[in-house]
Image (cartoon, rainbow, N blue to C red; front, side):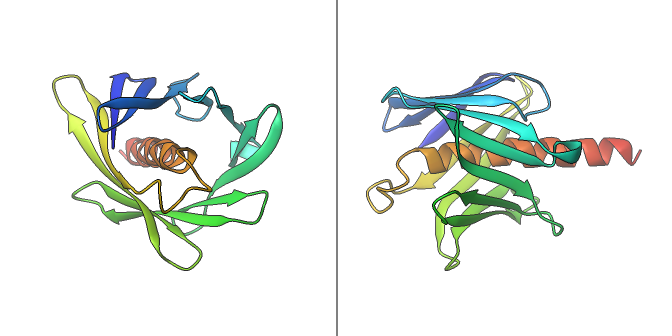
Length: 162
């Protein structure tokens, strides 16, 4: 699976050469976004709360999940049905991330590749949709969103340190 950056605010997700969805940002802070799957499922992501510290995922204006940065630099993804996942940076130098369930099993592996000519990221994604049928393709798209959010947060933190 691959996530290809069309521009800084638009990613197309492919599996075996077939497009399965898109992630489109509404702002350059990588917070407000929409996910559209080829099955016509649509999701919206938007910050809420004090300092926009929580990202809410909605489908048909109903909250289905939330993303929050934890105190130790991980992103917790919690679905309203009780499913919980943790998005972590595995290797800073290699830009590798993983999304694990609450049994610490890796479900999604994201390998960020920076394109210096176009000055944007593309992603290689390892995900087995057949073993994760209840999640469909939403989980890897949320992982790409989390990777962009994490990179954006870290870029902002390092820019403020100069």
